[in-house]
Image (cartoon, rainbow, N blue to C red; front, side):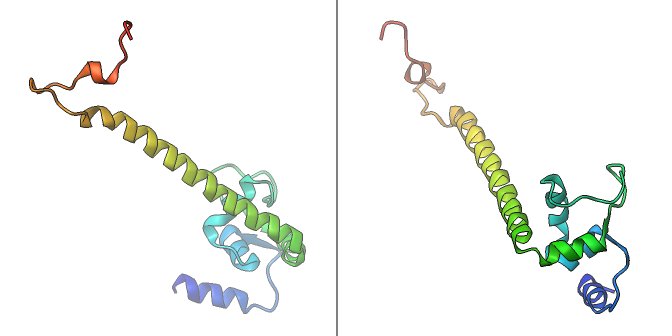
Length: 127
């Protein structure tokens, strides 16, 4: 059964279970499954109990029902996801910029001897 069929089946249930997995939580709230860890990291969702890092996280359906109806919470959650991607893309751009400046040393014009001209890149003490 593919994920879309599973999602459709889950959303058609008349009574939801008391606790939901991260994927079911995402479907229930209208988010993508990969966005649930972002919401947990932002402190907007809290898993039940004290699960270890590498274990399955469960979320209380009763609390999710309240959050689902809370327009302010939904706005904060959407903003947190946008903020996550904005910061991540900025880090990527910064890393690319740093890599571009590091590789610029290999793209300097060559002197007739075949070596890059260190005088053109570094100011001397006499200047």
